[in-house]
Image (cartoon, rainbow, N blue to C red):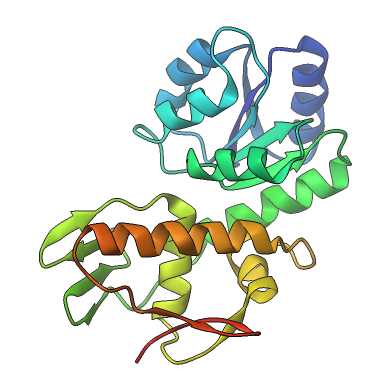
Length: 223
């Protein structure tokens, strides 16, 4: 059965172009013309969502926040806004990637394939305990003294990467490659902001995070 991709864009020509291209690439494609329709169609549980940011009535950021309560699939933003603040807002809303218009269809296909591959990876380690912190990899949950701490997808994936390799240092570029799935697309500001938010959430839970900064290199999970 082909992967199901939901395309959300208020421009009819963009929807038509993406539907034709993705269908030729072997995907099952449905389209939504706006945020309200997207939230309704997301009940079909697509395997991946391409989501335009600049839409009338409900913009893509708000749609993403709403969808994160209903779907767990990758959400890739399509937008002409390319400032760091825009990217950080998108990732904070629960987005998994940020593709700036105009983009090449080859790059879009590569990013889609990378995210779908990541979704299919099977984790053999189900759970680990680090002092007061319990990480359930299959459920994608982190608990501190039994209380669940909410992390967005990319925050959890950073925790997962580091905690499955305790003591190993990852530089920011390598982390971006492993988490976002495309080599050479690293963004230090994105990694630093995610680490800051992870540490803040652990601190708010009354727990010291296990993520240590290795100055001049990157980050590691303390043994």
